[in-house]
Image (cartoon, rainbow, N blue to C red):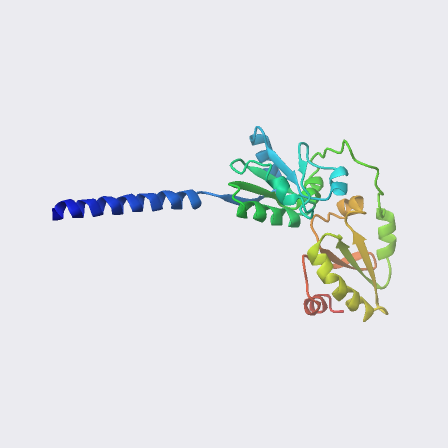
Amino acid sequence: MKNIFYATVLCLAASVSSCQNASNQSKGGTQINTTLSVDDFEKKIAELPAVQLIDVRTPDEFSQGHLKGALNYNINSSEFESQLAKLDKTKPVLVYCLSGGRSSSAASVMADKGFVEVYNMQGGIMKWSGSNKPLDDGTAQPVSAGMTKDEFTKLVSTSKYVLIDYNAKWCKPCIKMAPMLQAFYEKRKDKMDFIKIDADENKNLLKENNIQALPVLQLYKEGKVVWTHDGEIDEATLVKETGL
């Protein structure tokens, strides 16, 4: 009788263990959430027969040029999560924005919601365009060309230092840095100029100046770049690195 009891206990233990392992595999199965270079992102699109390609920029940005076949799910819209619900979580999703920040956030949201494969494009549309890859702008509205290269050259060709701030209204690090940069300039008006360049309004200029991410700061002296910085920076580091 004892043998029968022990055998029953062992069977139950084995059954529970088996169920737990199956559950762990289901929850902890391979999930991909990674960032690809524009070249690898392009290859991934070509590999997938029915790609779920998502552009998370605003509708205005989307209309000015996007990857062929992309759907526009604005990450800052209240409808974003309901739009994600239309996608197949079991199939790969490729996501991009202008420079990679918003799409990285979107990829994290998708991963948290159980999407099994999410690929974010490094550098976004800025990097894609900078690599001379094609855009579909069939419904694009005419937009201002922004500042010309000649106009830019005149602005930085001065005996004063000129601090250039490449930014965008949707760029969180740009918004965070704005008050600090303005204060930095106010203390040094006598020896420097400060120019803010909106990425959305000056796409041609950014491409000509090889700006492929945001934020970017450049310090000019007599028409030449003497210092540059990609990404967020604090005032102490800015002072130390520029010497101003």
